[in-house]
Length: 267
Ligand SMILES: Nc1ncnc2c1ncn2[C@@H]1O[C@H](COP(=O)(O)OP(=O)(O)OP(=O)(O)O)[C@@H](O)[C@H]1O
Ligand SMILES: [Mg+2]
Image 1 (cartoon, rainbow, N blue to C red):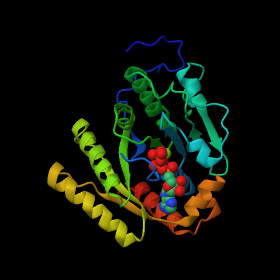
Image 2 (cartoon, rainbow, N blue to C red):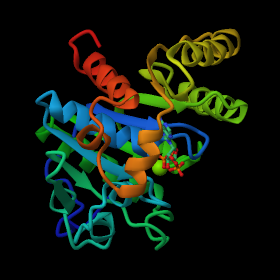
Image 3 (cartoon, rainbow, N blue to C red):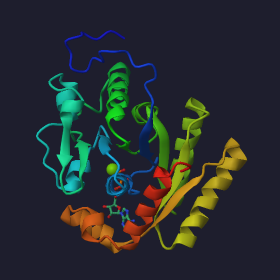
């Protein structure tokens, strides 16, 4: 694909592989299962472990990382797509968390309608930018459509967030099926969110695992279980980070444990 070299989106040196191992995509299939909350809190937890992290809002239709964080960025992906900013210039530091954010732009339609070639360029630029970070967490939109899958394909690891609701399980299964179709070697793990207890969360995971083993001959590992916690509703309402406001809440504990496992050498 040819892009004018004057465009800020152009990559000066060709990137051999557009995938970056340290990009973690957070997907789900079904909407409203807690992807954005989880992506934010995972980024924060990794930062607290001393890692340099970037949170990328890849929900190109209804971006809301900035809303959940109470961040008012004066630059975002809209500027990148319009050609005014490079991806690196579009980041905003989120001081209370100590990590960088690339905010999306909700509701304008310009990002949601990106052509595949532009999206591929954006993904390649993100893979390039990921070299300056230990981890890049990519919050994705709901669904299993082309844009979600294409963005996720730049990640070295995909985390699929599920809840115990049957529709969440069927939609996550659909996401896993199409992902394995696109990329049979994908590193894909499951996060159970809003679980009544860790045991109930493990049961939810077992149900999905069984379907994947029976029909796809694939066993996605469990990245972890996050318990349902009223404190989450409270921090989203007040636009504050869970790990700052309620560091010893159950959900905070669970996400810190997931971050520890993901950042360990064998994680
Ligand atoms: N562990 C949890 N405990 C309690 N409530 C939770 C938890 N995780 C998420 N929620 C609730 O779920 C709601 C949806 O979360 P969030 O916006 O992160 O989901 P999403 O998957 O990103 O949604 P969308 O698909 O619309 O982008 C939150 O507003 C919060 O009320
Ligand atoms: Mg979201």
